[in-house]
Image (cartoon, rainbow, N blue to C red; front, top):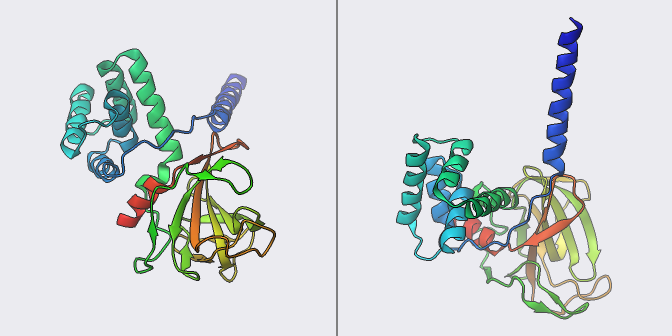
Length: 278
């Protein structure tokens, strides 16, 4: 029986090593190039076909840079994958094999890497997350990602500014845990909430006028829960207000692996447009 227990030990060690590998392997954080108008199409077709949207988007991005892509071409892509895979409901292994059969090796590698990156960094895009404001809040916003900023030194904007009246309630976009609360010279009164469902992702809410009752570091929050109120705090020592119009700065940060201390910021604009439509 010793051989049996040794075999079990080897299996356990191998499984542990594989788990550690997947949790520590760095995944490149993508630039979000999926066009806003196409995102709902990828999500809907992906859901109805059972083919995860990151594969569909990544294939179009690498092969066509989204030129001439619409719902019909996305559905044609699905049918091609099914045809090559030999089944109407291919699993991810079959999808990956189909991509390798249809594309040159270099392009196939790019598609599969990009699909993995989207599945990791943009997971909330296709799930039931919420827009941070109620429907009747009268907010407005544009794609302010990467815009120039000078306070605190030359830098680029790492989020989306959503303009709203001071005091407008702000909702948590998903389930999470507060990992940072308090004053930040750039962000004013701010919160950072770690996403419970995808712990590689955290959401940064800045320039608040005040926090909601019960919100403290370590607090668990639920999707849709009011966490604070729009303000104009920041750009100075603690308590500074009035340096700009009231708004919420929403940032999204992604770790390269589960336990990596390094975080990359990605453009929230696409996420907001999708969540707003939901």
